[in-house]
Picture (cartoon, rainbow, N blue to C red):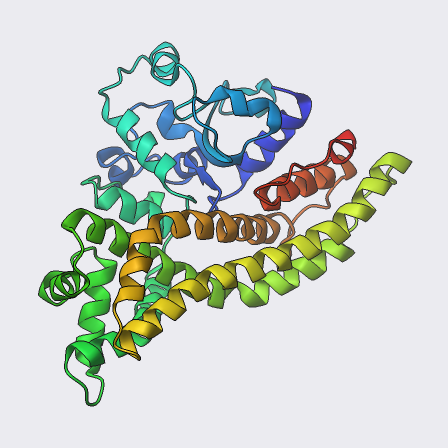
Length: 373
């Protein structure tokens, strides 16, 4: 790995998981001596269970690593020495060319190994947000220990309340009008979030005339939309603060002219890109809002049926957009918290470059002049 990659690895090593990074090494350090961690591991292979999994926006020279063209890949990083990350690490992408052979050579696992299935389940997700990560594994019958998913009971309670309010019009429609039944809303919200829709949701499937397979996938993505909508509402205050902090944060030491030029430009571009991405998230969410309103207000289910059929593609787009912003906010909060050490010039450049790559437009490459810094 390059010097810059090693520095980035050290930064990730100290941070908690984010929507873009699943830090299993950090989980091991904090929970590795607990019975639950040992009894219900995320991966059965020890090296994988102490790795870092990253949603990585591919650079131009990495595109040929795959048979099919893609923008974002799931990157597995295994440190050579967990106690000294200056030694670097080995990495590979899920489903890169010769992926199964690489896994066998690196970890001694065969294509049929359960860990290979889990890696591919992670690759299907647009982000590694803990709620969606847990739900993706649960729907496939995988129950990892709670320590792998940083979801507090308070957050779950707030989300259930948010979903209750969101689905109140649907409950009202299903119950035939009248005052919204709060108990029915809470029950249905819990069923949606537990991936156990029950009879009432089955009636919706029949109304929408969807196959069980399309309906199951659409409902999972609908759950993702509800979750991302809640995340956006909860995150907006912090997004604005981070966008402002990006402009004002200065490193210790005096940057050379090239570094100063990059940082001056990077502050402006990053701040604008954060808010632009939030606008894009809002536009994607409005596709759902409009379809849901057609179903519940206009009593025209065809738009919501189309939404559920298109939900996997929209969900992937939404996850990439919001996941990148979540990562920026989470990492900025971690690295620039009240008791954090001052940031050096090289580290701040690394952080800006990482954020800019993550927030880059799907059809836009980060310019080579940015990398020159």
